[in-house]
Image (cartoon, rainbow over all chains, first blue to last red; front, side):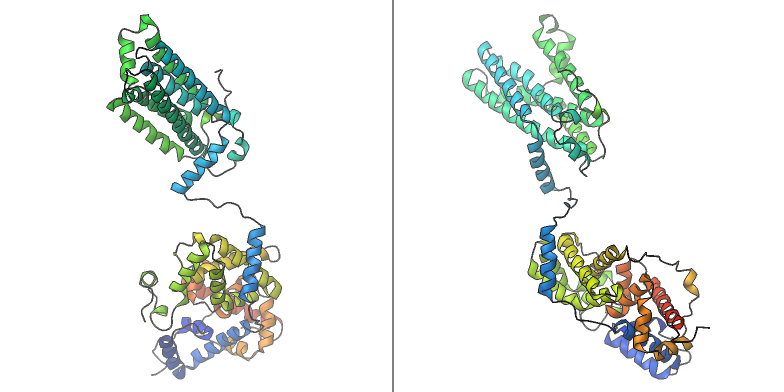
Length: 302
Length: 209
């Protein structure tokens, strides 16, 4: 093979000198080198650099010593927690962490209000259990959610403000906790009322409050994430007073408003659909970084 | 010899088309990283043994100090131990480890040597054709070259250390540095030219024309 007219493997000479080419490529280059003095000269330069680069070369430290040193340091200096992937385990850990941060007063207040409602319904008798529960259970859930978020109510607010978890996601996690708790309470209350007053079935009792509770909670959650917890609580309280008024004030219990209220605050396909839409909105909002705008408002009198 | 089908598809390079097992796509390494990710210290030791020579050679040449090189080696193993669960198989295990080692070296050497990368376009005048310079370098004493190596800019030393001390193929150097293979080749030429200039400054070879 002649040195003229063939392609010089200039680019491969450095790798040849380093010894990283596989046998077939080596053979090709060696064949070329026998015929090409300019490539031999170029290779000499690379070979010298390669040899120099490896000159004062000592053996690496033994594996046990290096690994022990590295692991000792790992144990002595705990690292900052890695940014976790947003998966099921992350959600479970977030819920568990938030569970510790929700103030005990939220749990205690909820159970006290529910107990009063059960006593009142049992005392009134005559099938009033469903009505009382449908009025009280949603309010407990919403007040609970409003009570677990915001700088004024947050024992660990400073710490939360600097974490990578979005405040909206934290709010969502806490709303989930409070909802689960309110749900449990209301089911327990329904069971107690079923035992005390046998004229209403358990399923009817649950249906009476389940739809209104989830709808009101979803609505207030979206408002809390979008605007802020205080606005959310205000709107939810106003809506609910309207509802209570149509039930409790005889002059309002007939007519257009009462009929609308019966439709809206019920467990029906329409309200379930609206609830799901609101929860989807809340989930979408929870992915946005930053804090709800109204987070710094003073708490409303409650 | 058939190598890992999945990774071979990603790196259809003639450099790995035949011959011995390519350490950059070793399935054994991937398994080891998986075990390190779940806290297996023995797997970390095995992984280290497989790459200790190249890794320590690179760090010694880059840091020019055995003690510092050992510290960076520890930093690297610590980082591998802590971030093994983040290894996603997008690069070979060897280039992943070298990438970590390079970052750890930068972290530790940052205060000693301000890192300044030249614009590749400006240095493009370096003549890739073989000439008297190659002969000059070849004739200089090895020790003289090693001295000149010590005064090289860190990015030149890094290139030479990756190519000749760690003996990474240019394709893997490109992965470690996050640049195209062509850039690796031109940077390597510039590093060699810088080495020649360092030799000339110290009177070992004649000034390049």
